[in-house]
Image 1 (tube, rainbow, N blue to C red):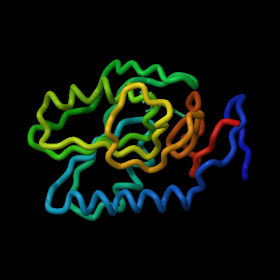
Image 2 (spheres, helix red, strand yellow):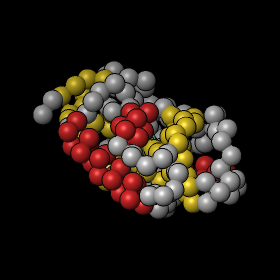
Image 3 (tube, rainbow, N blue to C red):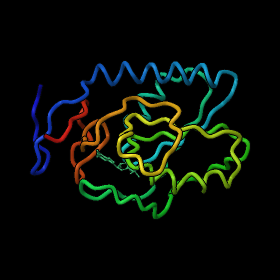
Image 4 (cartoon, helix red, strand yellow):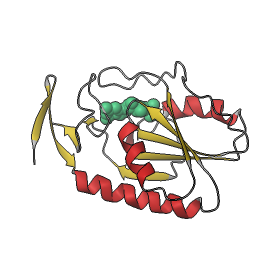
Length: 177
Ligand code: 5GP
């Protein structure tokens, strides 16, 4: 098990690269089945989900669209949860099958605040795919249709997720020691 340092904190390997990639293939297989004959629009939430969205999308073998949007910021190691704004949502979602792509759902507040904005545009359907879910931390219950890994309520970095800007480039996911 590798121990790494990001800024002042030590982290240990929690999910190795092959396990992440294997699980993403499984999620894509489920999505390919569920959306066969449809043309879903994946809306990936920046910054954290860029790696997951790219790897997931490579395994989607049906017609599908992808866009990236930016929501609230996440400072330090505590979720602020305040969705300030959404930048980049130019698509008209009316009548579309939308799949939100998130890196992690923690308290659920971010999506809880953002989903009504999307629903306002009357998509045909709306599902959520999140690589990680801290179900123990739930404060705003949400149905997450595609969950990669349910993880304990501990801070993680890597595979797109940062700690104060660093760690996004790690291929594995690391947990705070
Ligand atoms: P929520 O609104 O569900 O509480 O938090 C969602 C956001 O908080 C995620 O999109 C992510 O930016 C951030 N977040 C929550 N837990 C962690 C974590 O363990 N590590 C990192 N890097 N970000 C997290």
